[in-house]
Image (cartoon, rainbow, N blue to C red; front, side, top):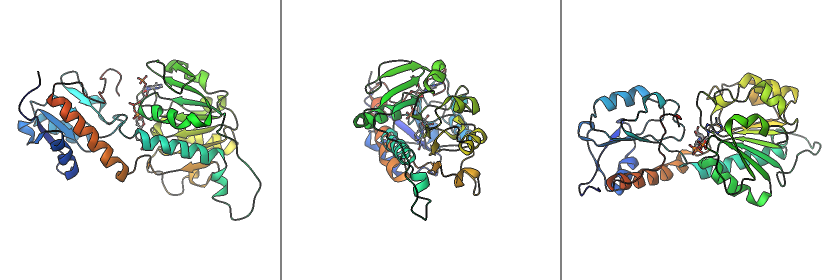
Length: 307
Ligand SMILES: NC(=O)c1ccc[n+]([C@@H]2O[C@H](COP(=O)([O-])OP(=O)(O)OC[C@H]3O[C@@H](n4cnc5c(N)ncnc54)[C@H](OP(=O)(O)O)[C@@H]3O)[C@@H](O)[C@H]2O)c1
């Protein structure tokens, strides 16, 4: 039954920006102290201890909204006692655009061209008509499939819960991901970080890829074993890597990846702060409205799957 009273929502930690409070109010919520709250919007991307403390101070909280799409730092707190949502899909459009940019830049040789100070030889391959494998089938992949449409690629998506996806030629389940690496001109990582996907792409996986293939990672750095990537790029085992995320992150100055011509790095800029604010505000407003009406919330975290 929808309640006639405005939902009482706490916003924490104290450093949370005011635009989030405005987003809660836009959804009809009242921002209240933790002790009075029915729901909590947690605005810190990486502070699980802070969230744990906040929940102890907020015994009546039935719903927790997390800010990021990736929730690996918080999964140990996610339980069946409350509803948990995150920013999955919120940043999909800008991140998919960056994935496409990294793929085009990498495949067309920009890693080399942009570092050149002299007129060199021609290099590059087409994305048009390429075979593309995407690991992950969530918000980012859905947007990327739409952006790839004019390029007439053959796209294989690998995901946990197989279902038809518009723009994908083939969708296969995650335990068959090794089948989808050979033959791909481009492999894009757009999946959640879980114990199963931590270190998913190492030496053996890269050896099974084509020597010209580009690996684009817009998900989490830990999906790729960094020292294996350095080896694979150095030995020409794969064509190159476009990385928006790295392990460690930030990637330290002087790290070998910085100086490799077949590596293009962006500093976790898939969705910049300017791009993200409005997108997250819209999600929070929508979910506060749904919470007030007793409706289904967008971006639920499954405690068993861990994303
Ligand atoms: N670079 C950035 O700025 C940025 C911004 C936002 C997000 N991210 C990262 O990108 C990830 C994806 O974001 P999103 O919004 O697309 O999230 P999402 O909608 O939650 O999608 C996550 C996808 O990962 C899939 N998955 C989980 N385990 C898998 C496995 N073992 N093999 C293959 N697929 C697996 C899920 O499959 P099912 O749906 O079939 O269960 C789901 O489709 C986030 O978790 C986050 O780490 C990065």
